[in-house]
View 1 (cartoon, protein in one colour):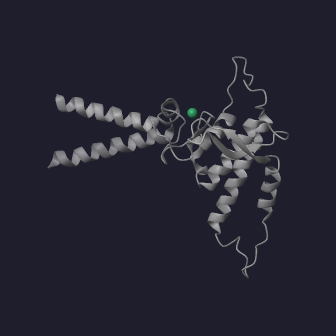
View 2 (spheres, rainbow, N blue to C red; view 1 turned 30 degrees about the vertical axis):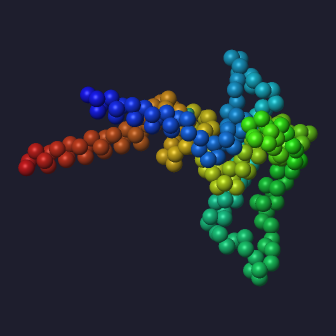
View 3 (cartoon, rainbow, N blue to C red; view 1 turned 90 degrees about the horizontal axis):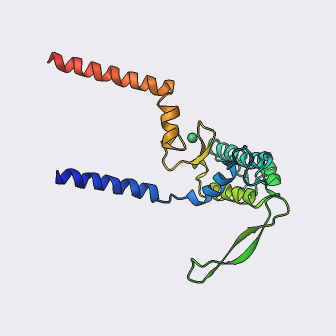
Length: 209
Ligand SMILES: [Zn+2]
């Protein structure tokens, strides 16, 4: 009984650690998710009026284009190297993406940071003439995730929400969506049927012995 109690406590602590753990890239992804998953009033209007559909579409297009480029590099890693050691031509995809990114201008800025021992920090800050600050932060988050090679952690759930995949096998934004979409899916039903068949066959063979 004592042993059982200790085991339960250990498991609970493990879950708490996972829940509270911050994963690499999660902070940058937070800016993207805040912009793509629009908080709405009861009437359906966006709580932040600057969070328009056009703005979200621009951020999603940056994600899509960066992913396309990453995919192309993966398929052809030598594709962007110059044949004679000089600079390679800039591919059309890069030019198009760079044109899109012109909207997200920034400048270095010092700011007060009570969490740091020095009390201040310096980082890029948006030049807010061309887009809302939330959109700038979202695109900045996308680019930081890309540099960390973690853009694949941004996923869309069957409910339409964007989420940060903490684990490679995570397919839904929440336990609620996992139950709602995965447990009811044909794929899951087939998986359960297969497991039941295997269980039945296993016991049939062992009964014969
Ligand atoms: Zn979901």
